[in-house]
Length: 387
Image 1 (tube, rainbow, N blue to C red):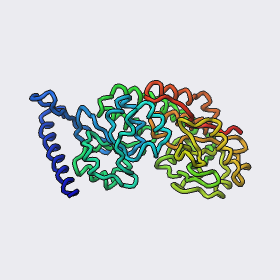
Image 2 (cartoon, rainbow, N blue to C red):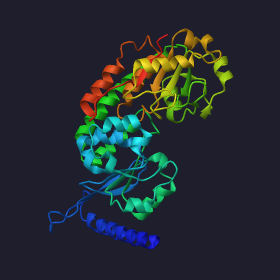
Image 3 (cartoon, rainbow, N blue to C red):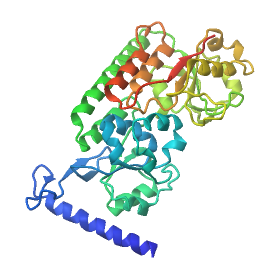
Image 4 (cartoon, one colour):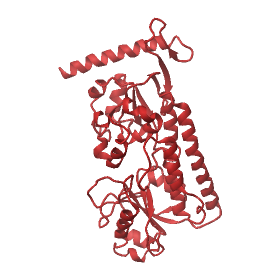
């Protein structure tokens, strides 16, 4: 019976898509409207970031995010409208990002009313549950494009749009914001916002290239995810083609983690490499565990107390990074968010403190929030160990 009901819904969707195609073909600009009714559907064809043609309503009212963390992007685009237009997310916002949930719930009162679909990471989203939502747009990052649940949504005729935040951590999020902003009729706002962030990013990358070209010795870096207690070793990211490995490589760091990704780096390798800089990735993954906690409700004092625990690891007191006070924490999810440019500024300061002493990422991120984010800025996204 369940499969029969799903089949009926799928047939209905395909018939609707066919009608849209017929009518949209009547317009040279790919937009359609019916003169017979003021409430008739209007549609437009867009190209997403993997080159797919997608027909969407020009008045999108029901949005599905399969990756919950993309709520930061959507909030920067929609502002207060997010509260009435976002109808479903993948995983529970409250359980996967407690800081974000607590901050966003101050502004958005319908967060607890959103449908929770399941984990796209685990390919655990039911297509039928998405069909039942009657979405106008389903926003999916490219990293999930080949998941079975996403491919089923596409073959069913659901309005799936693929963005791409991860292929280029520096500019990908901005391109995604511009694309989605255009689809949601927010081009003016997002254009200004992305241009602001890109200008800051351009400045950092251009200056980094000049520093590297000057022949300066590349700073030796050790990067570790702090989602476990300091008496354990968190995973590192050494793949220079993606994620944090790509970011550090682009910024000119000599990472000791190259070739090791998604697993801990051998403790002896860290000691033998004697890094100039150690950076611990932090977030509020779990409100009770002894982790490197950063975010909207973190404090300098608590972050520094936690960083001090890393200095107690065997042999670390003899490392150059510890002896010179170059132990830092940086929010692990920072680069994929609309304000990731400020994190890029802070990373440049961590790697080249003299050359980038004029930058003020704290000021810039607060300015960005006041201009473009619906939620206020608070807490800390990065810090340096107070030796």
